[in-house]
Image 1 (cartoon, rainbow, N blue to C red):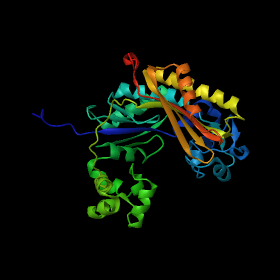
Image 2: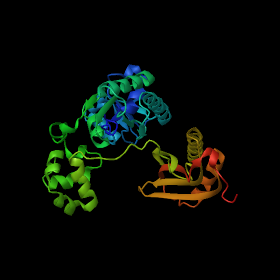
Image 3: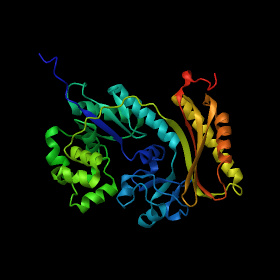
Image 4: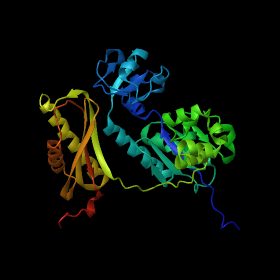
Length: 366
């Protein structure tokens, strides 16, 4: 009789492969096999012909073979791979396809934690049978719904599942068992652990700690002295593959926002017409996002980034919740009047917070 026995956790991390670029290849199959980057351009262009400012959002694996990577300046990318094709990002399409792949995954295993536009955690603990079979069913469902490949890592917890999903890209499937830690996880760089960034990696390297295994062998007291009690203790735990975090299957957003970075800096007076059109369009798209997700908000804010990279925000609270573009535009415009506009702008964003479900909104003074 095993009614009192707990089911071993089997957590899958599903990560779409080179997501934005892969979505674009569905629309531009003639570019398949060529180095392709998604960035700030308008229309088709070769990197060699691009003269604007911007960074790579993502790149195909063919482009990555030339050293191109997310966050790299397009100018630097052009020097490394001038023949690469540059396409503009289309976030509306990426969100649409994201909804498709998540819905397909939910039909296979409904316990899902949404981690963003291109990745999810899935609980396969109760799936029964072979874990690989369940993971293959996930991959097949995603491909049938979107035409895209994904890589899946399966492990006893979220920490190890996320690491595993990166081990065999693209279109990979990696299963990590509890006993695989020393052979498959410890040889990896410490920065493969989600949460150990470049700065922490440099501090660890200065201590002679470069791999997860070396981190596991480090004196916990040393880690606590160098990194503080919280982060130091966490480093010791994750190096030993310990992670008890549950899947968060429902997460209410605190706010919803839209923003855009300009190809060139814009001035509030000299580029007033262009800025006004962009501002209105952001508010319209934000209102569409709110209605699609079933929310209304009462706090409207703006975000400005100037040509000196200083970022400023302003917000105001409305008397009632709204998902209407005109109300959002009017409130955001009032926020804009309270912001200095002498300097040119690099980025403009609009945000709606204090969210409630659409059917629950109430007047502030009702």
